[in-house]
Each structure stands twice: as structure tokens, then as C-alpha cells.
Length: 184
Image (cartoon, rainbow, N blue to C red; front, side, top):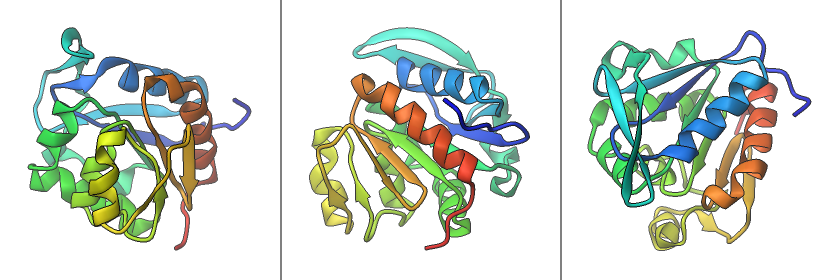
């Protein structure tokens, strides 16, 4: 990954039920590119990861959502897992946090079920995206054009389908975060 994220701070918004590898691998890629990464969550302490249907490792929370200001971050990463984004889209604070990135034109990367939260934040209309296949109708109903591709980039929005796509997803995420803000 040739792009540098030195001097940039990236938020990873997650809660209990995130797909472990969809958080850990992007965080590794972001840090390898020089970014400061903060795990932001509605709860303090630790959040529980999953490896598909089984509990995985916990990850420490760096900043509680109520104390996080989207203006202090250069990009936002949204991991998947079924439970994680479904819980986050019921949190008004999480939706407002995501919406702030979207409205500011800051890059956002979402994988697997992560795009569910983008629907609630009003950030998918007119966008070309991919996701876990079960989100296709949800994204299309919200105005997105859904495609079955490894990674899709649309004006600073990076999306991928599943953990198999992580190498391509991480590379494009770092590239888009390095480019910075995108005007619609």
C-alpha cells in the first residue's frame, strides 16, 4: 500500500457483534499506512467480536461515541457482522456520527453488513455500492445501485462484500482515506 495516512486519524465505529476480521484487518492496514486509529463505540470498555456465528476476541474501545466528534477524524470505517450494524442503526448517536462524515464529504469504508448503517444515515442514495448479498434490496430501496463486485469506490465511499474481499477493500480504503474529502 503506497498511500500514506501519516497525520490522519480514522474512526472505526463498532459495537458488540462485529465480524472480527472485518475490524482487525482494516485496522492493521490503516496503522501500517501511518494512521492513528480509534475504535469508537456506544459503550465503554470492550466490544465483543465474532468469527461468523461464534464469539471471537474482544477489542478495547478507545472512545465512547458520546465523546467522539466526527470533525476530529479524517475518515470512517464500518465493519460488518450482522449484529454490529443492526445494533448501531438503532443508535441515533451512531447515525448522526455517520451522517456527519457523509455531509462533510469525508471518506467512508464499509464492508459486508456495514452499509446498513449508511442507509439510516441517508448516505446511499445515488451511490454505486456493494455489500453482503442480503443487503441488496435494502440498498436498492434506499436509492443505491448495488453491484456484485469485490470492491466498489464511489466518490470516497468504499464498499466490499465479505472477508474474502479484505485485501482489495483495505487497499482502496487506504487510497481513498489518503485522498481525503470528496465533493459530491
